[in-house]
Image 1 (cartoon, rainbow, N blue to C red):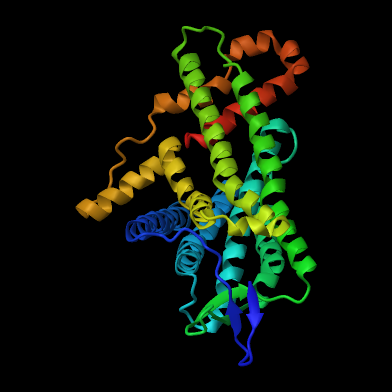
Image 2 (cartoon, rainbow, N blue to C red; image 1 turned 90 degrees about the vertical axis):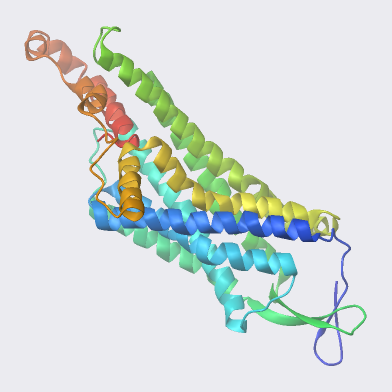
Length: 383
């Protein structure tokens, strides 16, 4: 509760919340410091690989680069500043930072979420509609530009409606500074925050989860184009399918459950603000916020586990940094690994000539199978 005083400051009626012990403060500092470091380091590595090793020569690289930039900004600004303000309930930085941090935080989170959504939509289109023309690099650049513009415009109110205010504690003996939203119309501010929650989470949730669920079904249903189950290529293809489906499940679960608790809290905070009077609400907030912010450091880890191209680049960078030497490509995909995917789409020439009419009648089915094979190869870094 806040009350005006004669000197223009605000009298602040504290709500009794759980007081964090020294051990709890150290614990949360370690937890937030860990995800901030992993986010900055991991996404910096991804950006280096895309820009200086591979180049922006594919639509996928554009999306991965944009996602990494958004997550890097989150690790640099959103995580440390938001954690400090929530932990100490006091603002120690210059006034302009109070407007900059909420704005940058909202922009970076929007960029990350919208890029995930755009990438899921592009993969959905490539797998389900292989006959349509593929997205060009020019279109990918326009989508990235649109994501940035839309994120900046949609986040602008968070920059202009935050100010540093002075709060006088109940005994009027101490005045503290806090960075808080200052707005004229409370109903408008509530509607805006609910809009952000819907556009930043619930709409992308439907698109991302729906797209990857359909893709996983198509990948799982795609049969190997060699008929013999004893053929090693068929066995390797089945193993690759299981790996890609597992990857898609992880992406959906990580996106859904990292953000769900915080987004639900943000909605309740606007609709039922009395939840902030719960004794352990500050602890719950730390749990929800940490879980959401951890999403920014998980993508480089997922790439390293499931994508062989990134595994190779990680190893090369590790050898250069640790041994000051050049990585010679140990552990890179073998010809046999790539044949497990690519050779599935090849046919014996004599068989093709003998069954040319049948193949023409089922050409659409063959192309769809090939698109699923190409998607598997791309996700595992075997393209």
